[in-house]
Image (tube, rainbow, N blue to C red; front, side):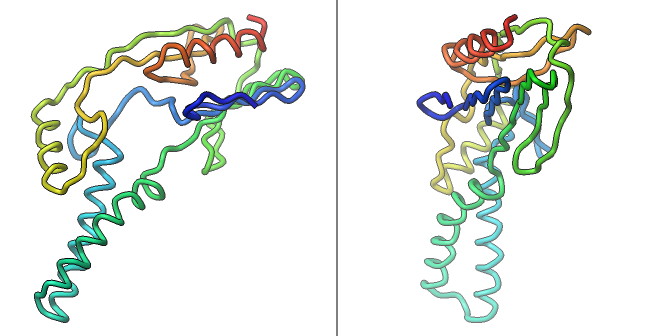
Length: 202
């Protein structure tokens, strides 16, 4: 098994098969609340605040307003934030299986055991790396989210920053692409590209 230092991806070879798995494959963020400000950390913070707030109302209605109730709800908010992030808004790992013995490639989302698609290995005509700048499209929304985050004492790392993504794609004979890795580190994307190119002999 080959893994990078921060475990952004894993490459496991078994005979005529190679499994590439990563949580870094999404290149577009979207939100039902406000376009351009979606972030799993922010969603976790909102959920934790809503849970703590609802519990606060219940406690006040039953026991009255007091200092210990403030303390309990504050502790629940702080503890709920990482729990929501880890268990509810966790990253989904995508696994790409290259099986040369069967001649099939399978792309699946782990945790759901759901195969997104499969296609013949021979349909892979090559691999391409594309560079994409993630621009801030909603600065007002970003500023609003950062303000709310600071008011709750929660800092969202990297939120609101423009960054470059390097996207590794499988190119098929019908000239369509399948994204299997997307990361801000060109070295990591190049390393995966080299491993897969050597394995597939393309």
